[in-house]
Amino acid sequence: MDDKDKRKILIIDDEKSILESIKILLKFEGYDIFTAESVNYAKKLIGENSFSLIITDVKMPESSGIDFLKYFKVERADLNSKYIPVILMTAYSDVKTGIEAVKAGAYDYIPKPFDNEEFKLIIKRALDYFSVYEELSSLKAARPAAGGIIGESNAVRNVLNEIPRVSLSSGTVLITGESGTGKELAARLIHEIYSKNLSGRTDIPFVPVNLAAIPENLVESELFGYLRGAFTGAEKDKMGMIKYADGGVLFLDEIGDLPLQVQVKLLRVLQEKVYRKLGSNKEESVMIKIIAATNKDLEKLISEGKFREDLYYRLNAVNIRMPSLREHKEDISALASYFIKKFSKNINSISPQALAVLMNYSYSGNVRELENIVERACIYCGGDSASGGTKEIGAECLPDYVFRENKIERKAAPYAAEKENGTGSSAAGGGDYLSKIAGIFDAINRERGLSLPDFIKNIERSIAAGRADKENSRVEAARSLGLSLRSLRYILSKNNNKNER
Image (cartoon, rainbow, N blue to C red; front, side, top):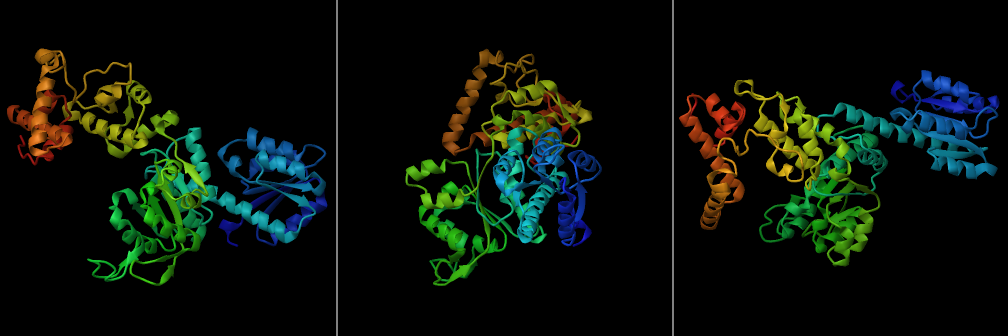
């Protein structure tokens, strides 16, 4: 056992003979053992050392093991003590106390006298449990800006607490939640912890498959693969996604969209770990962990005959529910700061007024919608000093629609209609120009099939290009439009406008 695996274990018992016997047993296994004959001395050792596991007797004259557990899990409720497993040793006649201790936060209990091999097995499991939480902490520390799950709310912490538990085995996991809540992020984090726990490596396959994006008649061939000649157009053998994921993780996103005829074949993969390519009579074995995700109510789909009940129960052995952003709005500030760093080198903060607006918005698109709002605000608030840009996102940088649920007044925005410049709803006949624009769009939409987003982009590019031609410089053009120079350049670049001045 190398230094990395030489775990520190603290044993607390008022009987010196028991301490010595356990110390000898575990030292032989390669652990670094510390002993304490009282709870008070144990507290001193905890203050001086970082332990991976604590084993304590229940009944001691000075203070009980239950008292110590309460102290360690409540009074010392920092991140480390929260996840360090505590095992209680209890007499056979006091097993009820051991069970109550587990409910109170103990990892496990073991009756005395105990079998040495069983005792060592419990120790190993407890240390494996702790190592997963260590791995999660290191991943969070190493990848705070790589799109990880961000937040300190109870809702997010519950998810982060559950992920390590489901990452210890090859068992199936079902992740549920609304669109934009981060289901794939959770799946990737499970993969990282599972792969390191499985082999100490991070390069085992992670194969994501968005079932909603695959035409229904192609889902089976994409998942299972096929042999040449299996159907018209099958000119050569093709390996399916299941085989690509062999030895790793297959992430089936939008599992509620899986066609019924394919569901029974997936069920066999889950039950027997075998599958068959289209056009083949030979079954092939596969070793994969399957993570499925959905934003649909699978139980409702079952009642409608659109989803197999037996497949649902196989998938739902372990369920992780991703909370909507409405359930953890206290994380909006941290999320917004993260996205600002992601999208802008110039902007470094968000104003209190803008944050208040974001806090009062309902987010039907959840974290993904917040990300889009912040990205757009970074583009339009630019932070370009040449055009008087800002170093923070103000309320005026936010899109109009987030104000519909807010009582906070929106001030002049860089890209908003300006009443004082005669372009607001009070101008042009009290908003008649909007009706005219809508009429123009309706005509073009019917005649050419032009979508609303493309129509808006065309207008934006046309106005920006025209103003750039009229003004003496792009700086003046940007200022007159209420844009940063960077934003104007961004709009013009999409039109390949070369009018540099």
